[in-house]
Amino acid sequence: MPPRKAKTGSVSQQQLDFSALLEGSVPEKSSYTVSEITALLEAAIEEHPIIGHAVVIQGEISNVKRSSRGHVYYTLKDEGASINGILWASTANRLTFDLQDGLEVYLTGRLEIYRPSGSYSIVGSKMEPVGVGALQLAFQQIKARLEAEGLFMAEYKQEIPEFPQRIGIVTSSTGAVIHDMLRVIRRKNPLVDVLLHPVKVQGDGAAQEIAAAIRELNHPHYRLDTLIVGRGGGSFEDLFCFSEEPVVRAIFESQIPIVTGIGHEPDYALADAAADYSASTPTAAADWAVPDLQAILENQASLARELMEAMAEVILYHEQTLDLNATRMVELHQSYLENAGHQLMQKKERLLSRFDMLFQKKEQGLAESVSVLNAYNPLTTLARGYGVASTSEGQVIRSVRQLKTGEPFQLRLADGTVSAQVKQVQALETIPSPNLP
Image (tube, rainbow, N blue to C red; front, side, top):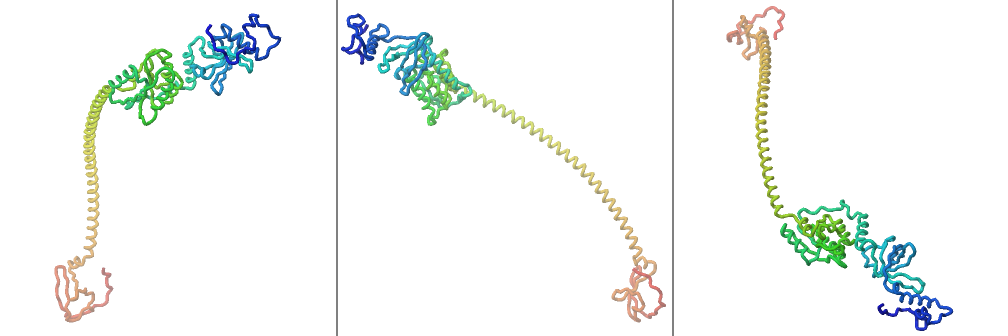
């Protein structure tokens, strides 16, 4: 047994030597103080070949409580007994899994007595779950917790940009992985800008660095379209930092779409479940995130040809449609003109017929008027041998009393006028005068 340093609070020189008491070389006292008994128990524990040193105990933990200072208190029990246990904050913070009631563990620790209360506890220096590795258990616990929160649901996945201009990469700046990724990106599309944020990809503090890098690159001034998070192959322990809660939450909260490429194809990390796309390897992630420039150019050329062909077809179609419509318009116009001409002829014929009827009616009325005029025409009367006498002023002489002897007058006959002079005026007997017009 290696020599050990004296422990503070051990039995003083004035107190009984417990080993000597056990061997019977020291006489027993009639009574002991509480401190003496406690000291004897401490000495007995320290000298015991098993519990006096660090010992591994298997049991089920329960009544787990964490103090405000980070210390963890619990009970370790089996079917027959139980014992209190303590993990100081420095030890508890190194655990990779969560302590839960009912979890069976291997606890490495030392038995110590707390003098003020006379109670004893196992002060643990290491704890591992029974039947499964600590990291595997932590993996399962983190997965169950985050899965219950919905961090792996497909509805939260973002579309990976088809034509990114700037890509951020979160990985180690050393090793072959970053060189392979850059080679793939440069080969496929040298126009894409790449921003590397170097981080640790395994070991203590790696998860915090990766999460901080993801959040940093989400700042708008980086103007990134896509993020690639990854590293090369390794053991489950090497890759475990990509399954730790800070990394998974940072990926889920990222406003920039994230492609992961962690390890090789059989490897799996919780970061893959939270990412918007998970590739089998880092180089596959780079290949997926970057479009092939040559393929884009060829596709554009093909699209241009198809567009020209489609435009030619459209132009030909519209030319044919225009010709057909023009022919139809000419035919419709000719038909319209013919129809209009026919209607015009019909209207003309109706108008001429109405004019003929009107002329006939007017001619008939005119003939009747002429007949009436002829009936009242004085010339007609004159033609029957009558004449009309008038003064030199042209006033019709209706009575002999209008004339005087020697006075000139005019006599209008049917075929001319005679100038005459009154020789004698002789009035006749008065007779009724006819109603002349």
